[in-house]
Image (cartoon, rainbow over all chains, first blue to last red; front, side, top):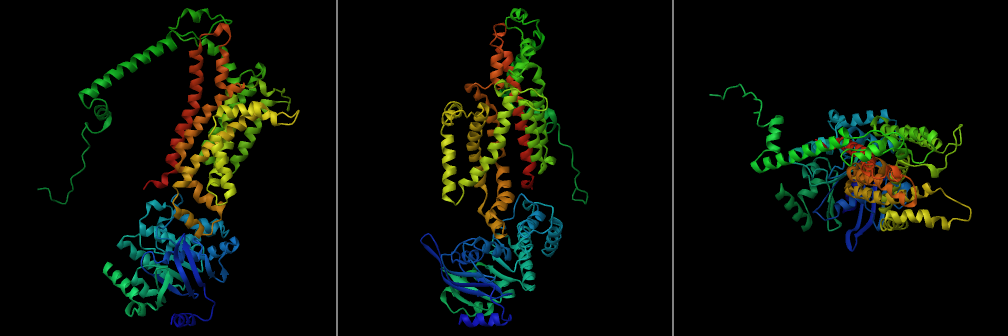
Length: 261
Length: 369
């Protein structure tokens, strides 16, 4: 049945090849089997939300997509390029895939503007003036152009996460990965980050988000993937996943999430 | 009632809380015990300072005619004999460098000082600075050796004094620091061969005293060279110092590398930065800032350790000072000479220390909220 879901999702978006293809991906941390035969296609322009209890492998999965983690079995293709030890392929993929981390990971010794222009200048070889103009454009989009000259340590968590989004966007990626972008934030800051992510979704960006924000999933996700113990248990449109969970594992997870909120 | 719209205006703090009087009260006379200790210490400091002024200034002899040190000896220790410095300062600064050519050594010291000052100013921190260093060090080499541009050739055996100390320290640290960064990075490399090489280097060099390295460089190393080939003694000592300082600095740098959270590497990777760009823009700038205090600590240590070259017969500042008072006429005036030599060392080390504090504050400004 998951195949039909994917068919529906990709049919809605012409017949472009999938942006991300995972085929029977397996990964172990030492003896621990953390990804078990994970197969997943993400269509161009699709907004995918990955959820699941902690330790379910969802972060590992998303980190395999830009090879911050290496998988041991199966294949991952991003934008048509197979992930392997080939460094040139890796460079090409990282240029096309932006990532936002739970702990922001801004560079504390660089100003906000420098954080945003570093990679465009040194990876994309963009002239400095052009990179700065681009950075200001994205900083305006995440609504903090006035902080450009400050250092990350002088900003609130929500502001830092918005800068991290702008920094990733400055590389003009085709795909954006979000690894629990709001989990380290205070409740009042979660909203401002989610707003930025919603507006990004509206531009048609291919997005894969690991998040527990069910409101966000309902509002923008084309598809929700539920993972548990290293495997994909259920997937489908948000309405179906949240209203009609078929497996006990998902039911249990949803009841815990609702209790937590 | 004061719940009106006018807020209570701020009043100046009472005199017991701020200002010099408050400082003295709080720090020196906060109770009768601390007051007593303060008074005793104050008395000792004043007494000692007055004694030093009496010895070093009032009763001092500043010059004597033709090595006739009788005037100094008549003081019987109640006054300083600065005449020994007046007489021997050229020897202390320049060693046995030919007398009429000593302006060249003096000029070299000036170039070194200028180089340090220029390098310390952040507005000069750009690519051209490397050219300035190459130019300055070449100029010093030409001045010291001579043999070109109408300068007489002066063999290295005749160099000595402060110039030698500055040469050993400057070249030593200028080469040891980049070497240490490469070694520190190498120790964290994923390539086993590089990692093993760096670990062996650090552990081997750290495991032996600098003196034995210097001995090896001066006595054993030439045995391995083919017949007739000879490498300058100073150069051999210089290489030993570079290797030794490199190993120590590498561990300091590695300490800095370890403080960097993994997220910084991941963020740089995710942006597609290559290994060297990641290292140059993200890793080293953060890691080195954090280790400025231990780095400068090691720098200062090695600046003074250059004096160990005396055991292989190189005349650095300290050895020159010691040799200056071997002459019978000047024997017994060690205090004056060692005070002077110590003061010269202190000037350089204190400058490094102050500069590092300044640099630390300036470079870590991003961490102030």
